[in-house]
Image 1 (cartoon, protein in one colour):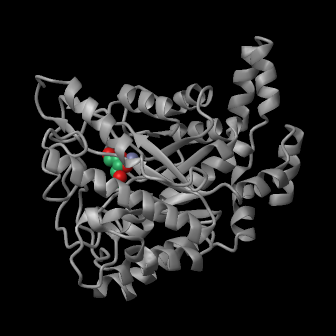
Image 2 (image 1 turned 60 degrees about the horizontal axis):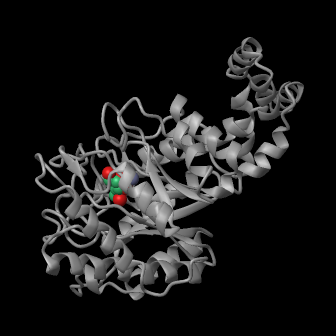
Length: 408
Ligand code: RNT
Ligand code: ZN
């Protein structure tokens, strides 16, 4: 089937071998937080800060051993090059109580060990939510004690990010997202934004190697309980990143539903050397459903590939607690890989030529023809070469659910 598919793609000027070779080296960062509904290892029972999971599927990981085991299962079922995306609330403290402003590289040694074992890089995220000091504003708080606490947390995270990069030899993307905002109409919109900018400046004022740590700011439109005002809005975050020479991070659940991140990527890449993405699936709002092999994910992948995948740090960000979490992880990660393969199998030069020659009839014709080429055969070949199960991967998860998850 693959040999046949290869010939068909060749007719369109597409080299499937080249596509497969490029694909296996595009890193996708797997978010550790799909495994336990973003709870982490600090004993937290619920989420706060404008994000939420729904569902109560059996067998959620409740400690590092379980989360590592689950993630290992996912890693074995997903082809391609992976990074592991860790949140600060996933530090491993062995009974010690360590507040967020006191975390150190040593609390993340086991993550380094895990990443090395799987030949993966590491990314990191300060956790500005689910904490007694995150009941309202954090980095933008008018309460200096609270604001400086979170600045210290951010600085601790810069040190941990650098440690991750040094240990793995792969740069660490450190993403700053806070749920800071207000439920109702603010009296002062500027004050919190001034303080937010000042706080991120302070976090990034400590010395770190810019080749090793890639700080990002993630914008958002609104969150639950934070409907009227978000401090880190799109304009704030983009301008902050541009003026500080750091990366903007776009999460495709963080815009109004008719806005498309696939259209924004090229705008940002016109000015930023590198950007970062959180790929998710918003259903009517930032619902964080499992990523599908759907039109927008395909279009995002095309923009990544067309503009140079090395300029875009791809991370997944969704959390569905209503279905088997390992399947949720695997389905989303495989779909991101599928979307990238689909993009790599596009005869881009030919399509661009048609656009530039104003031949929009033929462009539309070709775009539609491409949709039914034997993509599946190339995907199967990729799985085979990556030594990853085909569609029968699901049986593996069923076995794991029966023998491991059900016993938790
Ligand atoms: C929340 C943001 C953020 C989080 C993670 C857990 O809306 O998307 O990226 O999902 O930090
Ligand atoms: Zn996100």
